[in-house]
Length: 142
Image (cartoon, rainbow, N blue to C red; front, side, top):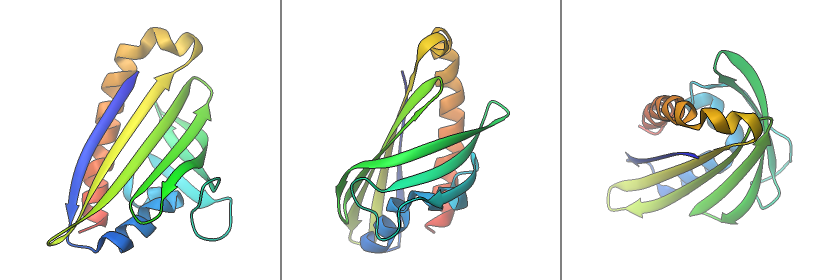
């Protein structure tokens, strides 16, 4: 299992930040590993909403279909994707602060099948991918 956790401070209001991040198709704007993102479900993000992302993983374009599995509107959203070789669970928590808001992004990547053998290498690559995404998120929310 590979896990990545990052905290990002932003001067933007918590509601604005939550709305932006809960629409997971916006990941293409802040995560350099995401080539394309689009909503599959119309309307505001809610439990069951789905998003199609295409991510660049180890030099390959990988389609990922994310689904919101839990949402506490304005505060927390959990998204899951099941792909060939791995399962991803991403939790985003947004908290208001005196000067804006704080985002805690917690991503859990679980290799499946034969990919489990490479779990330590997956963890290293996942940390690098996570660091780039966290830096992109800092820039997008500045």
